[in-house]
Image (tube, rainbow, N blue to C red):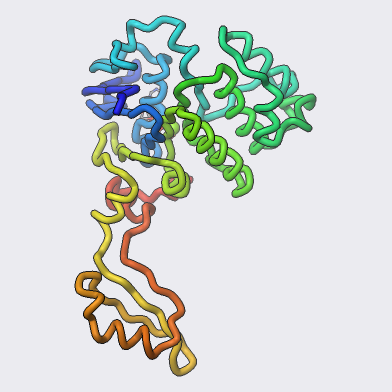
Length: 289
Ligand SMILES: Nc1ncnc2c1ncn2[C@@H]1O[C@H](COP(=O)(O)OP(=O)(O)OP(=O)(O)O)[C@@H](O)[C@H]1O
Ligand SMILES: [Mg+2]
């Protein structure tokens, strides 16, 4: 597995601040994966992204990008990466298309703008001033901006935050397509839906420290219970019984239930990522949403 990023003991303190915003984190991002950095508000997600995208240079620790120290890269690094900022930054007095033309000319390598606008459903609105765009439109334009230079690595900071399900779906589909074409994604979020659908691996960050790194599936198994709950309909109402997953095939009570009752639902006891988020970070994923 090729490591696109190898981060070791990364530390960062904002000027005039007394506490480290990032307190010695280590992780790898593999080529072709969607790596999720998850954590509550103030955990250090955006700070980490800003360091990895070379907006902040006064960090401690080591960051290797494709095996070479990040600080040894010059502007060529920006040709490789696409950045979706937490808060979209556009010129409101220019149209959507003019904005993208402006940002595209900053790069040597470019891709056609209109197909990108079309993919996120903005082609019809390309000649409208960004000042008249809705929030969802600005977020989609933000994504297009990140894709202008045909990046190898996409950094996306809370890219679906505040979007309605339809717009969130459009962006998630785009992220998946990017990955399927071989791209690598570094995604910061506190939205567990995004994680469930997109992330291959995740690291939970809390108070500037990584508290757990895993895959969504392994997390669910680790934090879940090995049980299955069967809901069935009897005497005009729904009843439920829970069984141990181990030995289920020989569990007479379970088998009898399957044979004799009208089953409504059957769920194994894996924990939702929302619950894991609370358990691991100590904070609800929705508290700051
Ligand atoms: N410009 C700044 N100056 C000083 N401290 C800052 C600055 N920006 C962020 N911080 C602090 O650094 C810590 C990490 O902030 P960061 O923005 O990285 O969090 P986050 O995980 O992205 O949170 P959110 O989910 O709210 O976006 C917080 O304690 C925050 O108050
Ligand atoms: Mg943030």
